[in-house]
Length: 310
Image (spheres, rainbow, N blue to C red):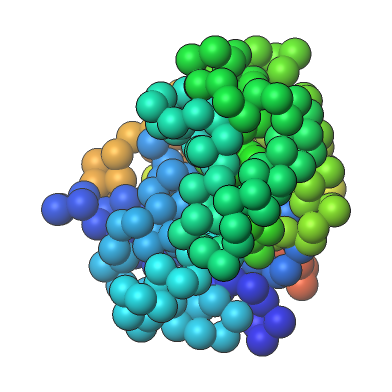
């Protein structure tokens, strides 16, 4: 994938004896919006942090515009961080309560654009506040003075002020009221279109992913089990777990289907076999690889040809 911004190849992450991610492979193109869905405990946030090298992978490769990220020394990694930013789930916890909003948003500029004068930084901060729907006069206020939705806008402003090439959104609207969620999602979509930023949007809410993303990854117990364009996935999901997620869409704003078991609880075979009504002998003994349904749609299921979604 020579034109990919990011390639993840056979990534594995372990915490002691627990395998959190296993054989994760996908790519992300410049300017693409890619959704990552799965229930709590499936490895979504772990994958985000591994991509950003906030936690070390046990094996596999991370390739950024053709460069091996895992070979970057500390100085190179620090330099490249301006191109990859993250927005977290809890907007209040992600902001330093001791810094004013203006100082919070200016901090990346101080680190990565040291050539800017104080007045130039302030001008960019004011411009960014207004771009995310807040008043420039709010720069002097502190996080506790803002609502959750406003704090998430501040987090977006901080992440986007460097115009990163990749923005990872880790459940950025799940803690917000439903009326505010749509505003934040629309803001992210507008910024992505305007600046051409690639977006990895992590969520358990398929309705939000359907609105925002062009392509979707489905993860279960640390393994990618389906990869497809958005419309194909919602029209004809091939994996039984994806079908269960879609069937539960009205419940996804407050949770998902049954809680995920831990990866090391599965004795072998397909991780979903204990919850799958289609499982047969092969499913209990052999891990299904991702295989093509068509040139743009992959699924990890031994029986996908026989499983029909309705």
